Image 1 (cartoon, helix red, strand yellow):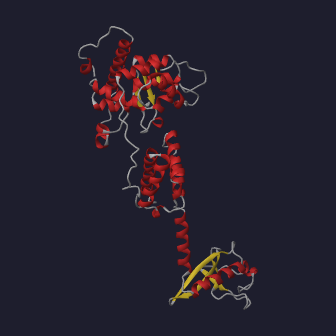
Image 2 (tube, one colour):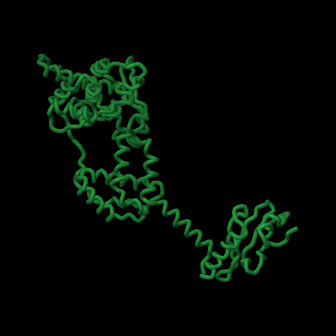
Image 3 (cartoon, one colour):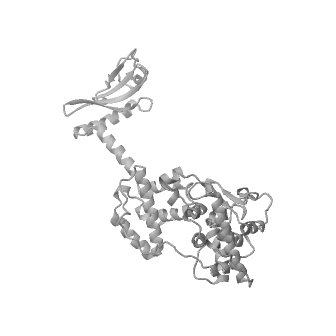
Length: 409
C-alpha cells in the first residue's frame, strides 16, 4: 500500500484514516518536491492539497484545492507560487481575500448596478417610464459606466449634467438627474452605496412641475374636436374621469362593469398598485357605448391598448389651436374644477386614487373607506357641468340650477 506522496498515483492511492485526518507531505524527487506541500485526507474521504508555511513566527496553513480538480504537478506549481508570496512576507490567505474583494468591487460598477436596478424595476414601472429611465442611465450617464459607485462624486455628476444640458437641453438634463438620483437612493437601500452624489447638484432649469389647468372654453373646443375614433373617445373619458392616460388607453372590456356603472382597475394596472374603482357618469357610459367591440379582442382601444399617442395628439392640436397642453392636464383640470364645484379634497383624492393627505401614513391605515358614493356624486357633478358647457357652446338656452356648486357635492 502506498504510504508516501511521490507521484500522481499516490494522490488517490494513499489510505483514508479511520477517524480524524492525515497529512502526507510531498516526498517526490528533489527537483520536483515542494517543501510545505501536503495532501490532507479526512476520514470522510475528502482529499485536498494544502500548503503549510511559517510567517511571523506562526505556523499557518493554506488550502490549495480538492485533489479531484488539482493534479500533483499543478499543486506543486501553485505551492511554488505561494512560497514566493511567503518569502515576500505576504500571507497567501490574506492576498486571496484581497483579490476576491477587489473582484467583488469591480462588480459594483455603475454599468453593472444600472443593469441590476433596471432588471429589478422593469415590472414596477410603466413601459413608457422604463424606456425613458433606461435611456437616461444607459445613454446619457454612459461615461460613468466603468466607475465604482463609491468613486462617483458630486463634481462628476454636476459636470456631466452641464454637458447633457448643452447637448440635449435643460429639461433632458433635469430628467436625467432625477433618474440617477433615484438609482442611488435604491442602491443605498440595497446596501450597495453609502451616499447619493446627486444630492446638492443644481437643476439645469428645464424641469418645472406642470400647473396647466384648462378653461371650460378650452375643454369644449377639445371635446368638439375629438374625432370619432379610439383616441377621440379616450380624450373624452380622460376629461370625464380624471384618470391617467395609460389606465384609460389600456382599458380592458373585463374592467368595465356596465351594470354597476364603473371601471374596476386591478392593482397591477395603476401607479400605486392599489385596485381602484372609477364610477362612470351617464356621459362616460355614452362614450363607451360608442366604441365597437371586436370579437376576440380584450382591450377596448387596440390589440394591446392604444399606441398612437403622438400623431393623434398632433391632429387634435391642429384642430383646436390652443396654447400647449398635455393629456395629463385633463386630469389636473378635472381635479381643480371639481374643487371649484365644491367637491371636498379627500373625495377628489379618492377619485384620482392618490395616497396622500387623508389617506397617507397612520390615517390611511385606519381610514379604509373608498368613498364610493362620494366619488360617484363628484364625477356626476363634473359631467353635468361639462354637459351644460357643451350645450351652451352649441347654442342651447340652458342654465345651472341655483346651489349646484355646493349642495350637490
